[in-house]
Length: 157
Image 1: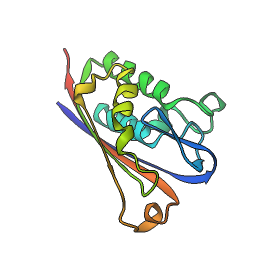
Image 2: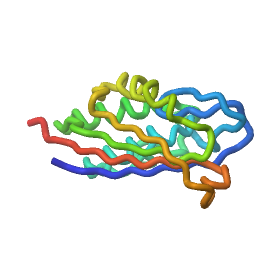
Image 3: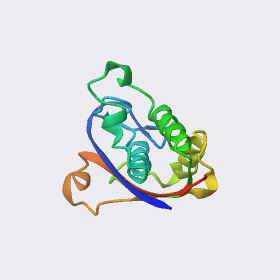
Image 4: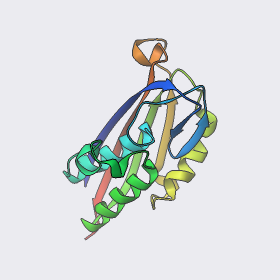
């Protein structure tokens, strides 16, 4: 068994939507990011890579590479799932939390689980929670959003 932890955050810029957990959410801002800025998928990717001892998201998808510009983070996660399986590991549990003052995310969680499960992660092992930062810090000032993820991997050999 291996445990990994991942974190990601992105600041807001003027825009019309956010992508979180593979779900497009109407909002009056967007993420300042090289890819689609999906903080949840990025945190999940880093958690899995941490458990594999395989670097971080920037190692595999550098923001200096035009190939990943505006890339779907669900697609990036699919690549990491393939890497995980090639190393003979399976995801046993995935727990995550998104921290955002706005928009309110609770009614998008089921859609996020469905979108993430399209990468091959069974929906019954995905836990997603949404919290506010109680008005504190950059999140509380509505300047951005962050996400944490923890995963448990099992060697499938």
